[in-house]
Image: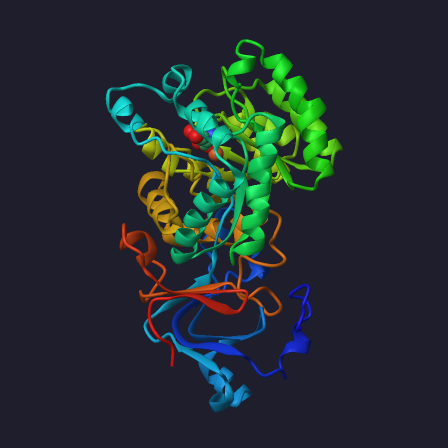
Length: 438
Ligand code: NIG
Ligand code: FE
């Protein structure tokens, strides 16, 4: 098996015969990390595009990246088993979706009517809907059903160009059912071509049996859930829904400190509905990524910039909640906060499509197409600490690529609401093929 651990080992790959090449790419977006990872400010617009570009792949790795002429002179073209002609096509790194809740039972389409009547997210939750409805159904679902539901979501995600994602528990809220969700993630990670990074989110809501006893539930998370989950190695990250009426700053800090002690890395949902000073906490705890940030204050944002906390923006969520406010992405870019974007796929905000998120990020948060693509690839790789392996197309990195049936990256947000993917290559293998290769 051909193995490369990091893209620094450039020299060793040039004399190896490729299994697969993609050539004549109209735009080959490399996202070369010499421009920084994560990227901030103006560097978020630097896609490091190669025109008439080419990539060569051996096993699961990229062994060449450059101009098509160079590729043709370097290798015996006729001998290469799989050749993809990408004339007039766009080729990018596979999308990385760094914030999702893909493991759940049931659906919440009925809440659309409540939202149209003006009910807020917290009102729906307090009425026993929202997260708590999904918790009731997820607790009852057998592991196999959660795996089946998750597989359907992953199949759709990969067909839309996502090759790696982060997935959270958080619809169990008992030790046993949180572990059931994390096991479903583990099974899917082993069985599906998509790579999944697991996150424990026991602090997602207050379960009904702990109503008005949040402190007791926090104690349970700290003394029972985190130790068991860490011991079984079921999660890499620990997340908390830090929000007014859910988990306070103090409770969030306590949970994350325990998680860190047990070897889990911290991340948070903050300032989605109310500014609780979540951005300040994110900086203080030096979390890897913080999600939502609609209401974060300037002081907190500046602290995030200073501490290199990645802002994972989730424009699908305010869109599905019918809010007229989105995270201040332009201000964040000005402050040099690294921005990632994600679907936040959950039963309130259900899309598998990072293409859709790119569209929402551009039209509703005013990211430019290059900024949105950076946020969906190299910066989202950083948000899950996988920037040495994925997120850009460089020699030695994983061969996770997407061929789109459009000539340039500007088309990704512009031609919206349809799937522009032609082919997806994951770990060097074609896993989605909407057109035969030569
Ligand atoms: O990130 N805000 C908290 N959690 C999820 C939503 C979960 C749900 O509504 O089921 C989010 O948006
Ligand atoms: Fe979320």
